[in-house]
Every structure is written in C-alpha cells, then in structure tokens.
Amino acid sequence: MDKLAIYGGTPLITEQWPKWPFAGDRERELIEEVLSGDMWGGTGLGPKIAAFNEKFAHYCDVGYGAAVANGTVSMELCLVAWGIGPGDEVIVPASTFMATAIAVHNVGATVVYVDIDPKTLNIDNAKIADAITERTKAIIPVHMGGHPCDMDPLMEIAKKHGIKVLEDAAQAHGAIYKGRKAGSLADAASFSFQQSKNLQSGEGGMVVSDNKELIDLIHYSLGKFGRGIREKYSGHIHYRFGWNACYTEIQAAIALAQLERLEEQTEKRTANVKKLYALLDDIDGIETFKWQPYCDRHAHHLFLLNFKSEQFENVKRAQFLAALNKEGVLASSFYPMALYDQPLYQSDKNLSMRKRACPVAEKASRDVIFLEQNVLLADGRQMERIADAVRKIRKNAKQLHRIDIDESEFVGSSVLKKARRSS
Image (cartoon, rainbow, N blue to C red):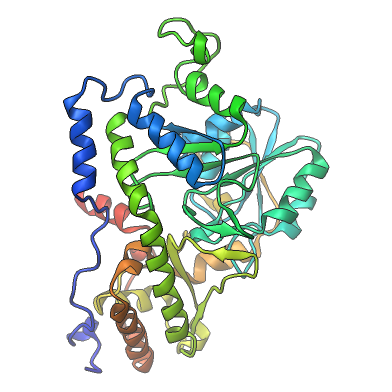
C-alpha cells in the first residue's frame, strides 16, 4: 500500500467522484416545460427567467436580479450602468480569474491591481486606500474560492471616497458574511453560472442588487440592445447603446432546478471541509486556509491549500500534484501568475493597467493548490482517503524528485483541462 501509484502502486481512491455538472429529473422536467412551449430564448424575458431572477435574488437576500449571458458580461453591464468607462479606474485583486479584469477592460477603464490577503487570498483591504486616486470609480472584491471578503471595512473605504463596490461572487453562491449572504454586501453583485460553479446552467450570470433602477436598466435595456425599460420596452426602439446579453429559458430551467438543491449541497461541502481541516492539519508541508471570524459560511467552490515545498522535502508543487492525482485525488494548481503578468499586456498595448506591489499574489501563484467543489460532495469516508493519500505521498516525498513534469501540467479547472484534451 505504501508504493506510490505514480510508480505502479495501487491508487488509494478508485471510485468515481460525484459527477459535475449534475442533472436530475427536476432539470429534465423543467427543460421539457420549456421545449413544450414557444419561448426558448430570444428576448430574455420568459417566465422561467422571471422566476429565476426573483428566486435567486431572494436567495441572496436582495430585492432584484437580472440574469444575463455569463458572469463576465454581468460585471461589464454593471460598470456601464454606473457610467464607468475610459479615463476611470477600477481596483481589482491581482490574483483571480482574468474575467474580473476583462470586464473592466471591455468598458475601456483602467484596471488597478492590488495585493491579496495571505490568510484568505481575497483582496487586502489594507492595500486599497493607497491605490485610490481621483479617477477611481469602483472596487471589485472577489470572494476567492467561496470565502467572503471582509466587506464592512472595504465598504467604509468606498463610502469615504464615493466609490462603487461590485462583489464578484462567481465562486460564492450561498456564502455568508456576518449573517448576510454574498450578493447583499455591496452596491451590487455579480454571479457566474458557468458549469464548474456550485450553481450552474452550463453558462450564464446574474447581477443582483437592492437598487431596482440598476437592475431594470441592465435587465431591460443594457443587456437587450438598449431597448426601453419596462413599459417602454419594444423590440425595435433603442434608447441607448446596449449589448445582446440574453439568458435563455432553457438555462433558467436548469438553474431553477439547481437552486432547489444548493442549500443541501452547500451544507454537505461544509461538513466535508471541516473533516478535511482536521485530517490535514498535522501534515508537514500542507497548510489549510481557515475561515476568518467574519465568515459564517464558506461556499467552498474551491478547497484551497498552501503547498510548502520547503517543508515537503523540497518537492515541486507539480510533482506533488502528479502523485496526488495518480492516487485518485483530483487536484489542480492555482492561477499561474499575478494578473498583471499575463501575456495579454504584452500583446495588446491598448489595455490600460497599473499595479501596486503584490508579493502575496505572486507567491500564491507558486504555492497554492485546490480541490474542486464536486470532490466535496463525496461520502465523508472519501475525505479520509484524501488525507490518507496526502500522508502516503508525504511519507514517500523524496521519491517525487524523479518525476519529470512541467509546472503548467495541472493548471486550470477540470472543465478547462477536458476542453484542452478534446481540442
């Protein structure tokens, strides 16, 4: 049993992990209702979308929601609705998925990168004030992995400077901060329903807010070719420049069914993560990211770990991941670089960006690994086997130096890896 699977030993885990995306009878029932009707998409104003807007907004403890094509355009439309564009600056954490910055670039504004907190990998509130200028119009904090940002002090900074705050809650469906749901903590929030997310419809996104005027502007006009709002809505009269950002009835049918089981799944992930914390805490070279006191509930889209090579016989992260995946544990490396080091800034000089020093973000790109949320939906005994696999590898760590593997091999979610293999 001690022989590593990567060298021909028996993997500790041979069972399949819970399938994701998952569809049950409820999804099929609601999709069939759509297919039996005469409205599948086109307007983004169908009954399933209306129901999902209302139910998901209520789930987030806010008044209104507008489902749109994806979780990037949701941020983009919100920035446009606030009048943010060329000449303006938007503060973004230096370590997150590129979509957060892309949304800012798409409206012509300047991205300002600031460092992250080593305890959570969320934006570091202590670094925000120094990044603010007279051109700063918004901050986009990202609830990384599903752990909510410390929003109260961030909102105080924003209020002092008259700055809008948009939660990027793409990974935080159901997270709770000081008794309040992610999505209700700022001027507005953006969610993603891409297929890897805890609540998914293949693709899609939503803006939620208590500001009815903002949501109406996005839902009726900016996301639908600039048409009129509510009673002025018309298919061929356009009052402003807008996008085609329509969500579809089929997507809404899937999302409505997914929403019905989200709470149960979130509680299961939470129970399994608490078990993993206890099981992994005494393994040299493996460091968990604990919940901070203000986090009442973590969404656990990602289970994040710090891999400390110097405490793991100087094994490289990619070598550890290669061995861990061979033992049957699906694990990946974190975002490969701070966003300001992405090659697009060399290839497109028209993109406006500035940065602060971000050593924590740069270190996270070298050290952090993650398990995806569907792994956390497995039986609790599987959590014990994950820990057993890590212990087995730790015991045989010196053998890992023989593994010849590129650091990029385990970058990206399983969705992206599958796409890469099939292309």
